[in-house]
Length: 114
Image (cartoon, rainbow, N blue to C red; front, side):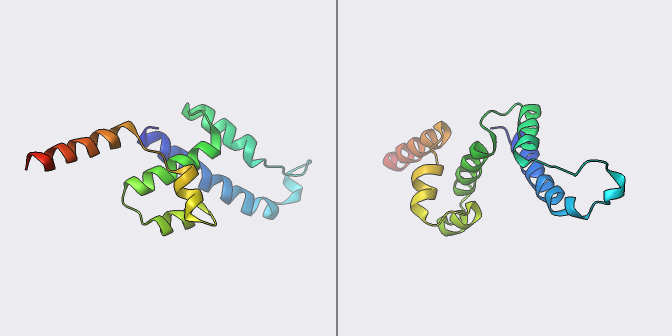
């Protein structure tokens, strides 16, 4: 996922949270129908507009992978993701990207050359 898409989706998640937190504070006199905000519907439209497949669940995988690649401690990333155990974070959400494999192979080759 491109960095721009990740930034858009993270902002969208914060927006959804804010909208849901404040929807009950909206004046009922402004609306003839109750304010119904479905997070899933709103996020689906945001993901579609950003050209990202997979929805919020895929974003969780991306966030975990990018946080670990950035050097985030496993326990910190586990808490960010809301997982009960690091086994969930590492076993199901963290992924090895092709570039990480190339980087590791390059570092190993460089080390062996001395």
